[in-house]
Image (cartoon, rainbow over all chains, first blue to last red; front, side):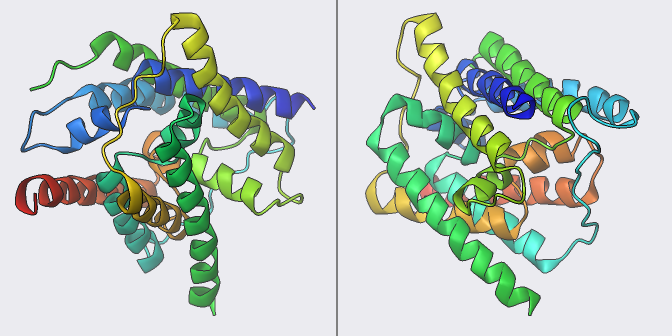
Length: 140
Length: 141
């Protein structure tokens, strides 16, 4: 219960951040990616200010014996630079560049009730299921 | 150059950073939105379904709260439609699953963990997205 409340609150803060920074707006994202057009550096300010907190805060927090509401930290364990990592980033990059939407802003953007966002999120969920099957096939 | 949203970018980005710190401090988890979503859509009860669903719900509520606080609709100008949006969504879903993360998990959290995988992933998807936008807006358009 406490973990769900903490996650709900964190989600609200994240969604508010995506909205205030306008990262929820595909035009702002494409504006940043379009270096040959009328470049918009807003996304860089967003990444930079988010990283200012996480770069300093993450090492301080993981020094603790355990998180406040859990017995242990659950962090990614993979270390190798492998083909799924790179090919996944390439596919994601193409999709991000085509629509100007990545998972966080797309999900938060559902609050706009814009039909295109619903179409994107539905396709993204279908894509994740395909990705899970691909992962299984590659692991064999 | 388009006028950047400096105040919004700095405040919003800080909120995103603070949210990621809250998740790590309280739950001991990385705020990787594509991964959190995977746990919800696969209904994985063995791996924290309630907190994952709560976070996803919170994301949407945060955007609702913005509209209440500021009294206007979300700033949103779609850049693709129809088939293109569906193709983009499929690629983002497949890519984030295969590549174990997106802008939040690799970009905001992974780089902060000094993870080589996340640094390589972020540089790759950023570069590929820039090339994609260049090709679609300046070469093929």
